[in-house]
Length: 465
Ligand SMILES: C[S@@+](CC[C@H](N)C(=O)[O-])C[C@H]1O[C@@H](n2cnc3c(N)ncnc32)[C@H](O)[C@@H]1O
Image 1 (tube, rainbow, N blue to C red):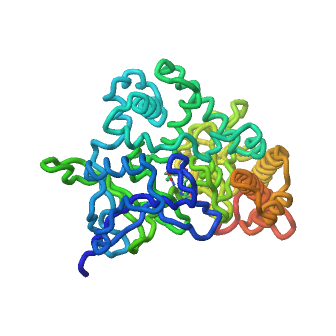
Image 2: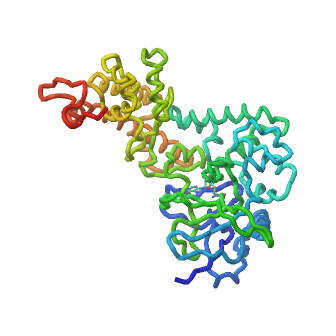
Image 3: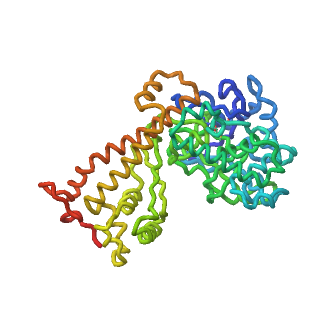
């Protein structure tokens, strides 16, 4: 099949309807169709149209940004892609335009940022470049919004709507963390607000998954998310021509779906992200319940007589003294969750399993409840943890569902209600599950017909040691 050529056109001024590029205006995923493309495709035949021509006209900073991209060769009239499921390359950004911890380290303030976390270190760099009007990134930094809808920017009144949620805890902890980190570079920073601004942009726009390293890329990190994109392999690093005579590492953005002329190019921001994550990093949520999640925290107590043995087993399975286990609605449980819970709850009667002779097989054994006592303790732990967390919310699931049904909540309140109801649904689901543990015990052969219990599963369900 012959290749189709298309280029990426600049953001449409009418997307979103009142287009303010600086305010990171959203296209709500709560609505089924997204109205106007931010980045769309055009075929070669439509290239005679000036991509910067639009009605109403593009704001001057967007025009300037786009011209800069053209000068840098990032935006060109042709971007060859294959008309296949995965186009070969949609957008190429040479390394000289990436902003990552190496960029910061090589800058004048690099020495100040050595101890900062990568995503925090990029922030003072952006602020400094913006203040000094430094090229080459100034055009890019100039179009970055001063705020997003991330919970990091919510007022106290707005945050009160997520009382009791993990999202509130994440938000507060992140603010405190950023504040303490910035202490070290405060000379470079003017105000707290400005400190927070680029941090959240960094969280927001970075393609941090490449080589596990944070990187901001003008302009590909301005691409919107769509729930209908179910693949995350949207980027890779390749070697290629990065100028007239130069060859360099290029960031290559791919569309994981066939993009037709004029359609908006989307990516998936993260299939594993919960609604709380989406609200925290990007300031939006999705209505589907499989983004409902809650993180259960369990801990091997220091007072546990088998503390050391249990820690060794946890460590051998990449877990620690405390485990944070994300549970999603309508998704399978994380594989480590049950063995970890059963390990935490393991008591004297089953302690023989902790002996060195069972070391190799213990994790496999813990895939099933080891005894009735153990199973009961796990159920109690989970129910107590869920019930106590449920008491921290201001509203019930029913009240929240009614609010969603009635509609007209306003953007941030809708985010708040969806996140808090999601967490509650997950916890209630767990409590329900745990109340059925007797049935599970029977299924696993741990309870006999007369109600008698066995320390190990009967018959073929006995795990091999
Ligand atoms: C990486 S930026 C994308 C560019 C952004 N739309 C803009 O105009 O600058 C991420 C931000 O875009 C918005 N966004 C992206 N995809 C979205 C979606 N599906 N629904 C709502 N907002 C979205 C959110 O405000 C998010 O914080």
